[in-house]
Image (spheres, rainbow, N blue to C red):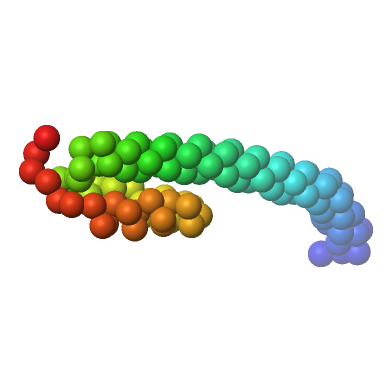
Length: 110
């Protein structure tokens, strides 16, 4: 190839790199913004789910307290809810409730 063709190829590649670099950076920025937005939504959903699990466990405890105990299935269900609650970052308040559930008498179907 002659020098003129090589110079044209060099200029063309500089133009492509010059134009595509900002577009690539813009795309990366857009994707990162979407990821951050999704993380925020997920945190809110986790918080809501944690609250619902906490409420359900407390409700089960109150039911057991008023019935002088819980069935094996109810205790097992409370334990499963508690494990999900903990996996979502739940705190120690429900640990105390679960200790009380574990100490409850086991009763037959109500």
